[in-house]
Length: 230
Image (cartoon, rainbow, N blue to C red; front, top):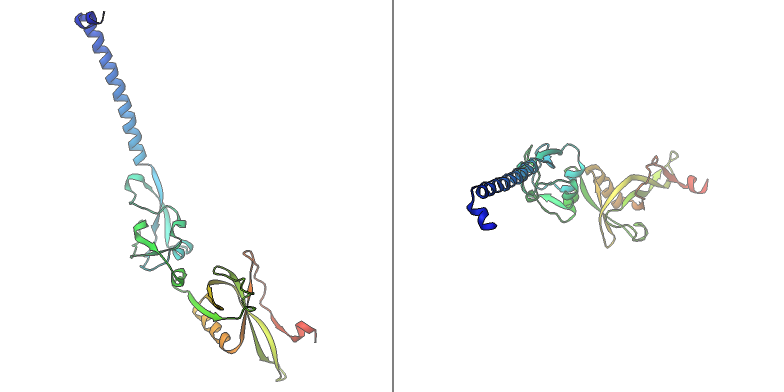
């Protein structure tokens, strides 16, 4: 039967039809695969793009927490740079290894691992060290990343010329960058740095540990009258 199929005219035509059907199916499958491949390559991917010049040495933490340094753009997959960064979280602990121009995609190759306190600071931030005893640093409960209020105890002159001791809430919600052997490193502005240095030299500084959802009440000045009612 099979040999007859190959030798007769009808068999040859049937085989040709079968071959044509198989070829058509293969073509349809190929075109569908090609169409899916093309569509996949044009599928947009959300990546981070610099909104302005990001200078070499800028920390990833500063980039991801500062408004206006980057935007999120939808770019076709086949045009996305290799290693393009798709989430701001990927910048944590990183530092820019080179200048990144306005409009340039942020990629993994542009950043390297950052270490040390300096890599946690923005351009307008400073790290200032305050030496404290254990009670002043909340019995060693304060660690890097803690948020604290800074109190200062000093002698102030009253209206009658008599010196009196007071405790003043100097700053609220300051970030602790590091702590070692009673030396607490705080993130501050340049002005705050000078005030903390002055207070550390002339007065006594105490830190109050804050909860993550701590409020910021009006800064009080505490004197003997508030404590004893005298």
